Each structure stands twice: as C-alpha cells, then as structure tokens.
Image (cartoon, rainbow, N blue to C red; front, side, top):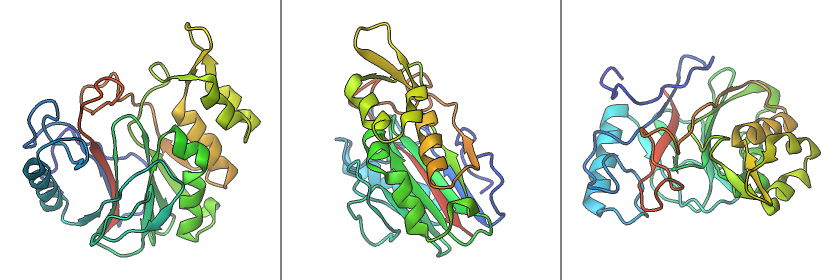
Length: 244
C-alpha cells in the first residue's frame, strides 16, 4: 500500500489491523474531460477503455478485487462477489482480498467493520437510499449486532450545499422525528438545507451503531472529488473496504 496516491483518503477510525479501506480521488487516471481523470464509473458516458484502465490500475494498487454493484438507490444489501455486478446498494464480505466497493459523486458512502475484523461492508447512501433503509439493511446483512460494529462516513455533499425540498424532509421525519434536527430552513422559500452526515448517524444509532467516525467532507466544494450537483456530466470515485 506504499504506492497509494498521496491524495487518496485513508479513514481515521479504530478498525482492526486486518481491515483496509480507502477512498479514491479524481486524479491520476486515463479518462478525458469532463471525467478527468480517475473515473471508475462505467455508466456515466466515459470511454469504456479508459474506465477499464482505471479499474485495472485500482486493482493493481490495492492488491484486491473490487466487487462492483449496479446502484439504484435501493435498500438491497448482498454478499460481495467480484464475478458479478448485482443490482444493490450495499455489499458485505468475510472473505479476504474482496473489496466491498461503492461509487459516488455526492451520495454518502458508508464503510463498516466489526470489532474483531471478521466482516466488512460498504453502503451507497444517497437520501433516497437512506430513507429506504439501506444502512439498516447493511447492518442486518452482516449478521453482527450493531453494538459490535463501527462505521465510517466518507466524502459526500456537505450541509451547506445540500438543498432539498419539503418532501425529502418529510421522508425522514415521518420515520424518525429526531431527524428534524438535520434540516434547517434555506434562503429559498419552501426549501431546506440537509445534513446527510447527521441523518446517517441518526439512522445508524437507531440500529445500534453508535461508534461512527468520518464525515465533514463536501464533495461539491472539494475539487478532489466528483460532484453530480456541481457538474451533472461527471465521473465517480470509489470507497472501498476489504480484509487482508
């Protein structure tokens, strides 16, 4: 792992030694503008050979096999399998060398591991997936009590950039009244500013996961990351977790 690009994000959390995790950034790849340059999404209109080259380099650098998914903002969690690309928004594994991987460009990536380093998981949690219960489904799929898990919140749209409509607020508050704390009035009438990190922490706590780290990024305002809200035609970066 000594040759990881210097600007890739390494989670700061008390994970067991055999748990490895990282978040890629935009630089150092083969994709042309507007996907420049280390785009890992194969569904955004980038050249297939460029994406393939970037994914090959990712495997080389990390020394593991990413298990990609066809992400659809669902509450479906599956066992990670690098041989396929299931329709799901979270995956878990207990097998070494297989990386649970999610692609994002404003949605929230959440990485999980248990306290002894036996299982890891990754979830793609945009607001629709959060409201649908993707984090709860991920925890359930790991078959480990939430109190025995830790989670890390990766780069996502920050609370100063995430403006939503009243229907988004209602989708959360109708399930957990406390989530009202994650919304504040926007300067635009009928709109709210949402804190996706706080929403995730509330949902995680409700299923027993209170050891939550990370957060504090903003993909919209940080040029290291792709952002769909900043530019609709853009690439995707990856958040990955695996066992040595």
